Image (tube, rainbow, N blue to C red; front, side, top):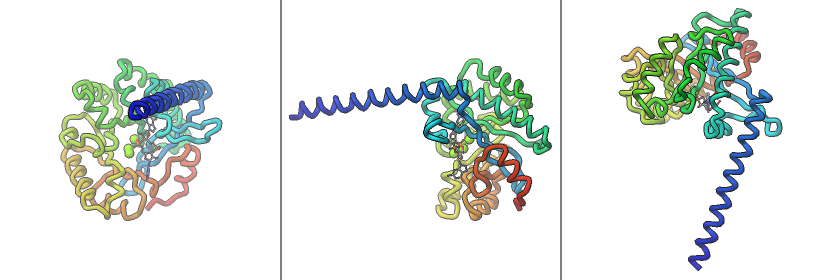
Length: 281
Ligand code: C2E
Ligand code: MG
Ligand code: MG
Ligand code: MG
């Protein structure tokens, strides 16, 4: 019996594996089509200062799937990564953001010190031609490199710390800013804040959302903010969902705030309307 179960177990496992492989293959061919037919779009979520003014936006990728509707990145970024398609899609996104910035400049919406923050995947960060390809995508769109901030995670940075430090130096010398995203979820060594040439630390929303509820999260946000301050980095509190969380993050000394309480990610057109008519204070 044991043998039979084992064999059935294997058959089941085997079947599950082929299903997973088939699913990934279907997804990949759909993603190829999505690139060809430009089914991707970008939502922008405002980043606001202590005074409640916009200082920039995070660009967040969406897939307008022909049957399934608007899909969040968690459902397709892993497939983009595995297939390598994240590289062309991310360059498309950079070009798109660049053109959007130019439009915002033309309409007078854009302020000189604003920036658009773009998420960079591990695969992309380690491409040999990442820097010139990115530069080209941004320049062709018409924006300046100084209008862009790149978000990388700790995990990306420490995969090969020496390479990462050098690459980040090159990127910053070109005028782009660097943010360390989801800080606290990875290796979370505060010493990385000293070693990495970065401008901004984004404290992961899991800590921000526990502000006022768990003293441990409060201490983590305080510690990160204090260390970041010592290294002259700006601190973003991400995932602010309530007035309380905003006030607590503000009192701790975070510099920049992002979250559904302030604004959800939106298409550019809608954002503009919202913000020109809204009193943030
Ligand atoms: P992330 O970079 O940490 O982006 C912030 C995520 O938090 C976004 O989810 C945003 O919608 C969400 N968020 C913002 N405020 C709140 C809040 O108050 N409450 C909650 N619960 N969530 C909030 P989204 O758009 O689903 O993106 C998820 C992740 O997918 C991103 O996390 C990022 O890692 C990745 N991603 C998004 N766009 C891209 C892209 O263009 N390229 C790459 N490589 N990754 C991307
Ligand atoms: Mg991000
Ligand atoms: Mg984040
Ligand atoms: Mg996050």
